[in-house]
Amino acid sequence: MRAWATSYVRAYPYARDVAEWIDLIDPSPAELQRALPENVHQLALEALLAPHVHDDEPRPRIESHGDYVLGILLIPVAVKDEDRVFYQEIDFVATEQVLVSVSKTPPGEHPFDPKPAKEACREDEDVGMYAYHLVDEVAERFLDLIDDLDDEIDELEDMVADNTPQVVGRRLRELRHDVRHIRGTLLPTRDAVRQIVDNRVELDNAELFPRNVEISFGDAYDKLLRSTEGLESSRDQLGGIRDYLQGKIANDQNEVMKALTAVASILLLPTFIVGLYGQNFRKIPELHWGFGYEWSWGLIIATTIIQVTYFRRKKWI
Figure 1 (cartoon, rainbow, N blue to C red):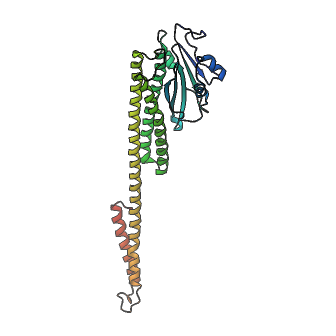
Figure 2: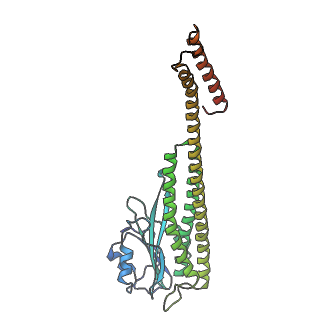
């Protein structure tokens, strides 16, 4: 197990005058149980200990369990240099006196670092505000992700004119896949935060989220709402790029058809002339003419030059 910066007060059992934030990374069962209050349900322990190996699962949620609140959050992270997205998971248990956050390391990646959220906390704040700072940091990450996604979409739009439809189509499918999975993470996170704003998540025997904390969570909810709107805009932009790509493919096909039509037409007149003079009739004009052969070749060359000149002016070839 690894742990980042320690919390303000270290005193067990949970009799504190000052709220405490304990953050852990990939803790063992024993280490997690030492940090948690005794009444945490076994199912919650299993959720906190489950390794993060499933991308955009489990579904983000914040729910009350009587004496504590359990939160499971996912944060998509864009890796620009590799054109991919991976997911970090940060879970937390909040009681009246302590916030325990558990960061899980994705395979081959780095875990979520709650340090910016902890640095935003003041010593006179309660656990509810600690939870707000954590959720607000997650909301900020979503806003950053939407900015990164917009940059990727702008690059994709520039690729349409310079790359093959196969390359652009593959990248377009990847981004549409990423948007769909990000949406499946962002919307549940937004809805979970909304439950706190609406006072639907609370402890049974204490008030973890008083009115001022709910108002603060409203700010985080607004950020998630802006992220949702930005994601829908990105989705629409991808639809526009898809239509642009399909139009470009159709236009390229038209250009090919023009070239094929020009080639077929160029070959048509010489074929007609050869067929005309190849008829089996005795009284064909120029049949006994000494310059008939040269005449037919001259006619073929002249009609070919006229057609090539015409099609070039029309930019078909």
